[in-house]
Length: 442
Image (tube, rainbow, N blue to C red):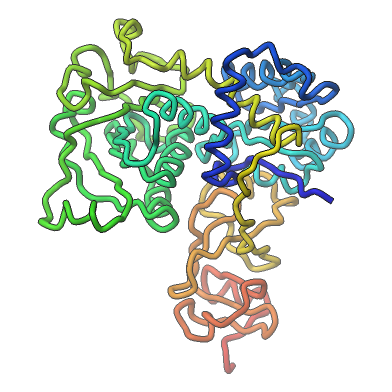
């Protein structure tokens, strides 16, 4: 039986697969009306728990251009979710006979991962909270690839709300995989989250260093810029003198709006970034293209729309052929020569005693009955783990063994030897004792 493929994260595609998807999208883009024979009789269900225009319409356009049909639930607040139906049950029903593929947007981080566990058809993540947005990332990468001819070694500046923007997070992970250099220029107080920077460093080899972005000062006057570069000797040697990395040339500027729907108390947009002709006249930016996932507010001036470097409307249009390629692939109507990535077997279920994910927006807090997937081991020495849904690191004070019913210090030699499927994490000794565990040797 063929394994169902989902697209929850851009990491679900190997780099050779992504490049092959780009070639297919380029072919589709040459004549969008010529491929209605690929998916006749297939149905995609759009389950959108959050508002969307471009993502939903581009998916539905892509499916219909492939000859398929769509079921649209664009306002899930009026669906059975309003009656208390869980996401897991909704997915079970829709994937039963209603549709051959599900496109899901949800406010909870990790929701697409959970949906994929309960779906009998492919699930595509169309955005889960501030976590990831893989198809937007593929569209963004595709635009860069078309405009610049390559991705490795490009200098890309990410500007604006870097804390809450899922498009920024997904894009940064993908750029790091392809060996691009990233300059983070956040609006004040909206810096890239620590867990994202840690993942960029540990999983993708992108080393953060201090950036001298004085040449980009008009983009964000009060910003502390960070430079993320692939940790290769020939690049790191540039910074051995301890000075900040100078931003002397930029290939692309990626703007994002303030994600005010996710902002918390104390988050402010008073000094938010605004880009226009004046800012783009700086020497490093003169040859840079400008991208934006849209919708925009006023972070890009209307005056810049006619500038040949503005790519955001082309970028939106390219979402259709990219999503045609993705739909064709997941529905088994397109075969790629490239091999998929290895399945991550480090995902381990926590049966009892698990700390709840520290991220209050994680789907584990809203889908407690259905959160099967526990954690993903990040390292054994020191012992560190991340939530298997939203990727936030899980706080660990003590470690227990479900086999021996003993608990140990997280840094002990014994803890490092416990099998992953027997690991139990505790906040403190009181929690461990309350769940029937005893200290080792007690």
